Image (cartoon, rainbow, N blue to C red):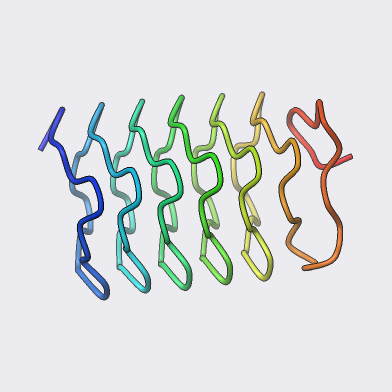
Length: 127
């Protein structure tokens, strides 16, 4: 599935465990409640994607662009978010325990508490 185009696809509740979507484009896709544990979205373009309620435990989003993504209630425990762009994303209720947040851009994101808006320049943590 590397380099595939999935713009605006509706795949709610899909099972994508251990799949690889490196450099794929999911812009505007609806992926609510998917099970994508251990999936690889390395360098994927996922602008405005809906991943609310998704199981993304141990998924790899290294260098992916999830600007304005809806990750509300998503399970991101142990996920690799190394150099991931989450600018303007909704992380309310998301679980990030054990996630690799090194150089992750949280600028203007709604934080897991559902009330805090991360400041511009929030890299690696919400300020």
